[in-house]
Image (cartoon, rainbow, N blue to C red):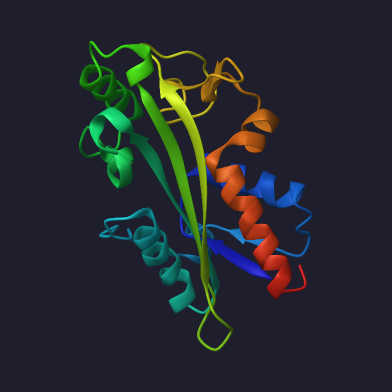
Length: 202
């Protein structure tokens, strides 16, 4: 089965490949938008992670592929769930991780540690081409706290600020294996893999 991930993000593609392999998915070739020759941008016009994931997965599905898409982001309690679906472009266009982190730190200035609760959310949508069955979505959630300043050098996005109290580490301080075990995307991918196995011989 050729599965097209509606993304060009190399970090996301690598994470998903690793988690699929760890779930025993053997007969899937994961491709990106570049691999199928799609050079355009997909307008993420949804107001929820589910809507955006479905919008993105529908692009490869419309081209005759099995479409896979992840829409994920950070929800901060003190900000009413922001930045949410706007996480990647929180500080504006073009997307800039450092600028997003600076804006988040400024937005939470003065708030004590106990008021910095948050969660990472990942929704994965799977859409087959027409006539190949029904699609589905799954959701993974990882709760944490936002630090006053970043820690760690691995990962991307808000990873240096996202602290896991039970592990006493930020996402950016975790090894690949540790992150895949607890992360929102790792959780969602395991749910996706289980559902895929139910429907196909993979």
